[in-house]
Length: 188
Image 1 (cartoon, helix red, strand yellow):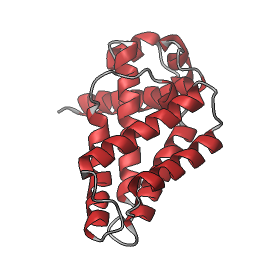
Image 2 (cartoon, rainbow, N blue to C red):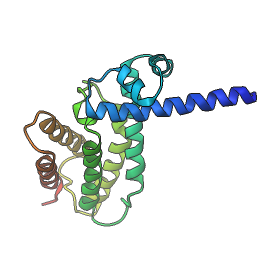
Image 3 (cartoon, one colour):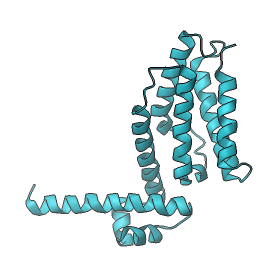
């Protein structure tokens, strides 16, 4: 690639990164914000936004992918192979909840209605800890690990929906979520 081509690619990469960062900020403030506002905050033209993201949905998906990637990196920084499994699950839930609090956009997204592959890296880590806890007798073995993971995700979504609908404060939803998870998982 020529020097000019590398420079254009570097400029394009910087523009894309600026657009994503602006989109996170703008959409966290107002989930229905338009691409014009994102372009303004990113310091680029609307055409530049469309050059990287052909639609608003494509941009929102890219934002959610980026936030998911960041969350998975944070999860991987946790030591989930040591300590009581239920405590590790609560660490995972706490980290996820902090992502919701830092990025209200995540609580305001409409449900996709289908299985979201973005959950896979997170649910894989939940399942690994749950299976470890079941082997150690810390987490109930009466229910399959896969079902417990599905239940954790559903509880997390329910807590998020309660906050988004104004039925609970984030603090109350976090507390209720943690209590529900403990009761669901604890071995009797």
